[in-house]
Length: 260
Ligand SMILES: [Zn+2]
Ligand SMILES: [Zn+2]
Image (cartoon, rainbow, N blue to C red; front, side, top):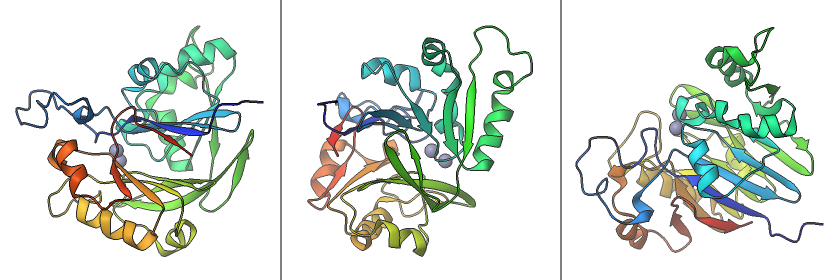
């Protein structure tokens, strides 16, 4: 029996270009505060005896090394944008150690894109050392169980793209949303831990919630605690923004660990 507590680690909390952005001279990108340095958005969860990640972006290798994580059982994908999938090739050390194809769960559209972006992992004659993936399509509200974890996929909208949020027991993980349908709102009302995206403090964005919208939706959901992620430099300094937030809302930062 594992004595370790169930936990989530924010592996990355940045928007698609990360923070700092290459070549950008603004005060947030130049901040010396570690909490203002954001790799691309991803999270690690240890739940019961299972260890897994949500999304696998271009910073995956660095994130695993930084948090000293050396094993994963599976991956849940929210959608197919590159800031959420580009790290798949770096799953090779885990795939080679276990000598089996790595299980990936996502919408059919997302899995189809994985085949297009990583064709060498699916060819008939895979070259020695190439990654191998086993793809499992999921559907909204079709609960499924992997090992000892039960997961409910939720419909989320990201601009014109339908994507997935995940409910795992009392934890809800939503990233890249700009609209949450009523059916999903009913599933997540008063959850314990809500992870939700919030891009910046400007008025709007075509495919992401901005801070004012995220705070509105948190008010509706009424979670015990909410953590904001997928953050751009335009959100401002962590230290200053955190002071303005309601008392159960936290601006997440890389390597923040929460008990589930
Ligand atoms: Zn994204
Ligand atoms: Zn996206």
